[in-house]
Length: 195
Image (cartoon, rainbow, N blue to C red; front, side, top):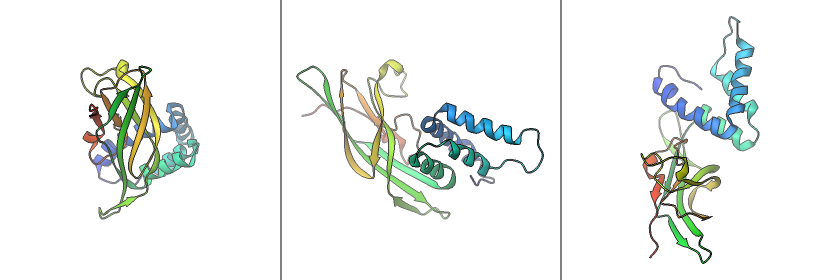
């Protein structure tokens, strides 16, 4: 919300922020917020709209406290995530379906004006997905998505469980990279065969 000459904030962080806001609030809600801002300020002189006005318009579209808190984190704070998956597995059931376990480690950090990071409580709904190919690879398309669900994620280690008709080859948390993650390369892992 407060950017001066840091172009990387507006261009790099801004893209991630707007994609995540669109994913959470929905495209229609974001469009309504932008439309209301444009209608309020079009064909007028000073005072011109500011980032505060954009944030207020988006916040007005938020339906839940979680969505309002997300807008605060994205626009008013510097927040980093550390989301990772370790050794997901799939075991065939007697009925032919698959029991899939996805171990996840999740952390959230608040960063102050001097760059000092402080771990803070994470309690959000974040996408977790199972795939028949690695997201982002040349072989990946919509047919390779087995399931993507928004799951309740908290700070620390947790194991997420799924039952699927197809055996996934990959599992991931925030598989499409909506969050500003310290290391997004560990968000998706190939499944390992249980011993």
